[in-house]
Image (cartoon, rainbow, N blue to C red; front, side):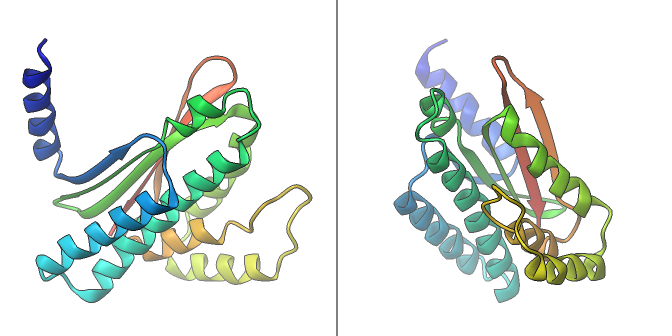
Length: 183
């Protein structure tokens, strides 16, 4: 297939899925800021409500920062290049609202705490998420933990429906984790 034909097909796929912005590759702070500003500018141009713009922007920033921070922590890993090049984030709009969908490769040993936290939050309503947030603020971090997971809880609180996630096992002790939030 010629690359020109592929590009046209890719553009049709993006339109069909309602994808407004997409990035795939190694994230940097500068890219996160540039894309974040582009999201805000686009939504403000559509005259979306301020709280909706803020929630989409905040969730985008939280997701991309989480991925970038994970990649940074894996700098000494033999799999660093594969992990750091695996980042993908899309922002789109469909009948449910705006969605922010991000994913990246993680080492299998790092997966359980993330999945456990997401499962813990899955059945909670807004009041339950607020309670979990407050409890997490007071809780001491377990040994080896890097954060209290407040960002995930905050994303769930800003989303209109429960966060969706999926894990695809790869080979050699790696998995690809995807997280979707709808505002």
